[in-house]
Each structure stands twice: as C-alpha cells, then as structure tokens.
Amino acid sequence: MQKDVVVVIGVGGMGLAIARRIGSGRAVMLADFNESTLEAAAAQLRVEGHDVTAERVDVADHASVAKLANAAAALGRVTHVAHTAGLSPVQAPIDAILHVDLLGVAYVLDEFQRVIAPGGAGVVIASMAGHMAAPSLPAELQGALAATPTDQLLDLPFLAAGAVPNPGAAYSYAKRANQLRVARAAIAWGERGARINSISPGIISTPMGAEELAGESGQQMRGMIAMSAAKRVGTPDDIAAAAAFLLDPQQASFITGTDLLVDGGTVPAVFAAGGLGG
Image (cartoon, rainbow, N blue to C red; front, side, top):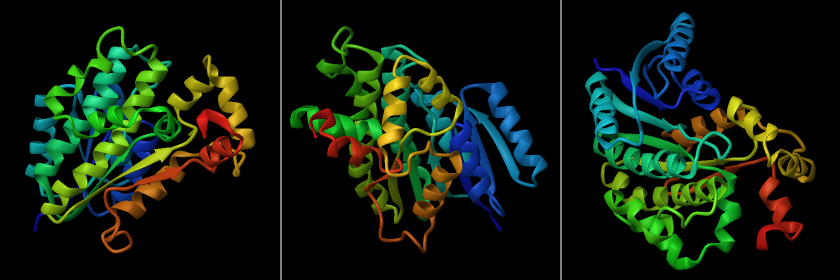
C-alpha cells in the first residue's frame, strides 16, 4: 500500500519543525536549494525514525519545481505540502527575492496542484509583512499580483528593474502576493478535492529571523515585539502547530483559500497604534 507523502520545501527552522510534527508514519520528502542544509536535515530526521527522501530544488526554476512535484507523486499519495522556502531583505537583493519569494511560490502552487491527492492540503509560508503592506498597495496592483499568469508575473511594470525601491519592498510585494495567490489557487486545488492556505508568521526565532533582528530593521522589529500582545518572538514550533492544524483533513476540512496570521498580535498592535496607514 502506498504511503501518504509529506512534502516540505525549505528545511530551515520552520520547515524542519513542520516535517517533524507531521511526518510520523508518512513518507517525507524534504527539498531545499542548499544541499548541505538539506542533507543535514534529512539525516537528523532519519535518526529520529522518519522515512525521508531528499531532493534538491530551485524554486525559481519552473522545471526544477515540476521535477520535484513529479518525484513526490512517484513516492505515493501527496497529501501534505508545506512551502517554507524564502529569502529575507537582509539575505538577498531585490531580483532574488522576487524570483524566490514571489515566482517560486507561484510555481509551487501550480505544480503541486497537479499532483495533490484528493483530500490533501497545502500551506504556504507568507509573512505578516504582507498584511502590513496591504493597506498601502493600490487595488490594481494587488489584483495584478493575484491574477497574472505565473509565466508573466515578473513582467509586471511595477516589478521591473528599478521600479521596486529596495529589498524590503520586494519582500512585502512578494508576501502580499503569496496571500492573494493562495486565495485564488484554492479554486483549482478544490477541483482536485484538496485545500490550500497560507500562514503569515510574525517575528520567528529562526536563523533568518536572527539575521533580520541583527540588521537595519532590528530596532523596529524589537519595538513591534514590545508592543505585541504576546511580547515575545515566535518559535518554529508555533508555526508547525498552525501548519499541522491547517493540513489536518478533519480539523480544517472547511478551511481553504485563507491566511492565518501567527504573529503574537503584532499586526493588530501596529495598526491600533496608527502605524503603516492603519
């Protein structure tokens, strides 16, 4: 009998926590661009008793994502997909962020919609940055981010070279697009009897989060933590718990096409304080 297959794309802190949380008794396919990170994560989970396959992927390359989807389907029934791969503003320039965080998510939504099993589900890691950007983004721009065909996405004039002012803006555009494109993708996924949602984490204690806290925006981020309801950074386990809920076919069977904000109350606090146009 074929095993159910869990696909986790991006095996940093959040991805590894999700794989560990939902991988028991299932075939786990881990995918990442960085081969050393990928092999270390796979080895760790194998030691813990998980059935793990590792596959290198470049999410900015359509053929690479298609190959990953096909490889996952060859293992069994693809019932759980968690896409956590991404670059932050301190890690990469504008073009790389748009290719990985924006185009890469669009490719994953398209290709895994092809192979997701009936009753299956996916989650995409977006960001609270998408919520913070939404009030200031014109409706036409948001509509284009939501509905433009994937192969034309980076041809949008407002994403052209020189049009995006800095990596932070590129990240905000990409993460808002993740939320919007997941909402639209729910229709196509639903035609296969499957669900797709996004999770928007706040400030999470991962290597990426640590880089951001040490960067130019670190002081602002610490201020947001202080004003939040939870008054702490999140953990990868906080995100894994949210993902496990949204991927569960019983607990979340009526939830699709939506975004779950997991930020300890940071965005509501910022808007209540009158920040970001809220």
